[in-house]
Image (cartoon, rainbow, N blue to C red; front, side, top):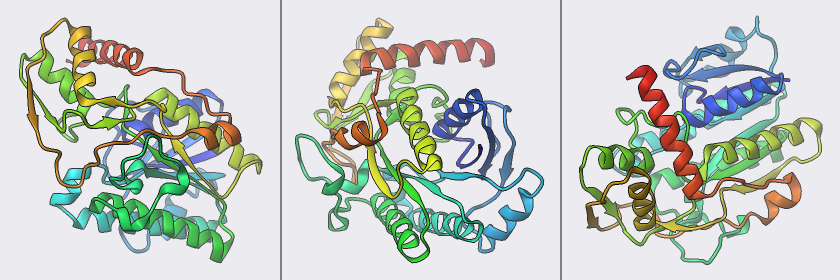
Length: 315
């Protein structure tokens, strides 16, 4: 299978590409920046917001061959950043429309990476796929993902485009310590603890569903296989661990792994961020056989081990 991955230089894109390669598939990436993690697959450097992107992709990928499926991961993904820079939300929408148009013109199925942010800030014990509501959008990032989903659904209805949508939640693990580009909470907390710096908890009792990257990739890969085989199509899934942990618990787990005392500074939740999300995974389990394997404590142990090994080699 030929798999085209947008956002292929990012954490999830890189891990997914390597998983697909290991299964014997061929991968081509598209990204705005080079891949700083590995060189196991080619990455076309292109701004997906540009008009004419479908023709550019068709031309640049001609020698590689027509893809069998497109996995659209590319996005500005930092929630609070898009509150400060709302134009980036519009860029997310533009990327998605250009990629969908490429898929329409080439007759390709799409796997779209959405977010648990589409559920807004409603407090529920667990959240199922039917709970999404555009009126609950708490941030411009959430609005961009809701709009992206709407575009996917409209292309399916108007043009018969096969799709799967995955709503991801706080993915962490291998290839996520590039703090100069994006400050993700887990690698940021690891870095600050190792430097003896205080941790700022924006909403100390905020409860989130942290997903180890191997579980996320396993779910995406199951979806790619099922979509390509015609077994599942035109469905939307939660993809997470299915367990909630507070930021305070996260800080305690990391401090214990590092043998450090956590200095904590509590601050209000930042604008646009949600205060509770735990995924209901019944649909993904039933239709895809999705079964996350890695608990948060175990995932943090693996993340720390990877970060240390990467630092030993790359400094």
